[in-house]
Length: 479
Image 1 (cartoon, helix red, strand yellow):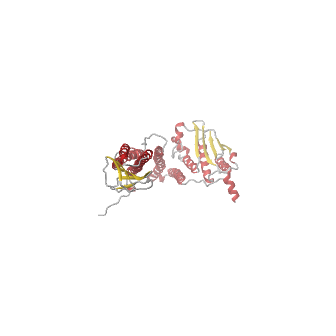
Image 2: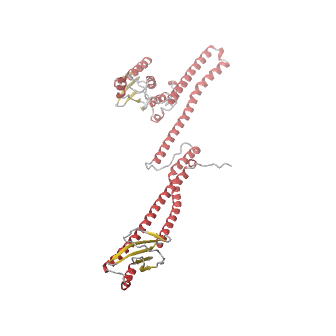
Image 3: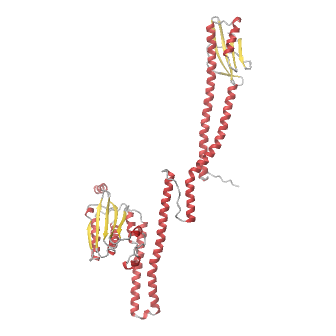
């Protein structure tokens, strides 16, 4: 049976965080303890060496001060001095020139048979003997006619026991560090993943309860809270888009159902008996053609809206004479509606270039002017103006007509939304014009706004970016 190998990337992220944080904490603890152990060990060894060397200097200084010749009569006093300065687990030997021990002083020390090494110069080096826990420092002593050697032998067994105990404590500490770092890593992973788990729970609730669910979080201005905030904003957009889509389907169904029902009624009438009556036949055909025209216009506007939503933003498009295009469009509308007074003030756009295609600017203006004419009421006056700033231009279309109720303003740019549904058929609109205009304006990075008061009129303004002069000068220089 082939055994399946699981890579680290396949392990759940909470366990990966636990493992990596635990390993990191463990390595840091081991590195610190290792450094501390060797530092303490070297420090203790250096202290022992310094104490032995200090004892060696005390013996030499005492011998020089007393001008000792190490005769039999002096050995008792020398032994007393050596016993006073001797330390635990330490042996002091004084050898003659031939290496024969004249004095041997020790405290709790097993006097093993060690080979004596006479020296003629002071030796600071440490030498190990026997089982490795003995250190010996040798130094010459010369006073008048006497030449000999002082040997200090230190049993380091207690030091090694202390070192072993310290190592055991640190080893136990490392094992405890494994457990503590694992628990700490688990706790750290849980804390870090808590916001993601909350997001996961919210997504599960959205699936079960609906799009109104949101992540509850505390905004402490860090990356996780920013992620939560962006998630909630995204869900707001998704919910809004879903509601608009549902409303669009509902309104589209209603809009399509009405003309189809009228056409079906007239065709049924003709099939039953109306085809033999010329007057009824003419009336039914005229009504059917009218509804087909309305249906065709609705489908075309829906296709235009879908195309406007799917096309990418076009920042490379440029219109160098927007004032001419606006003037031509206003002239065309004036020919169609001679009873209206169209006031044009777009001189600010002269010599400026807008980031928009001519076709789309004409389409936006056609929609806004058509709405202004439809809903201008008795005033019969429409004003078109333009204001230019450093980076953008605002073009406004204003009427003094019926206006829009305040409660309807947030929805007038939704697809198939109409303020006065009872008069919608009389106005021959489908509620898609402003939606199309909004998509076209946003396509070029612009914005569209509506200001209206019921019975006082409406102003629709859209802002489009201006082409920068530096870019234009570069293009002119190139050509």
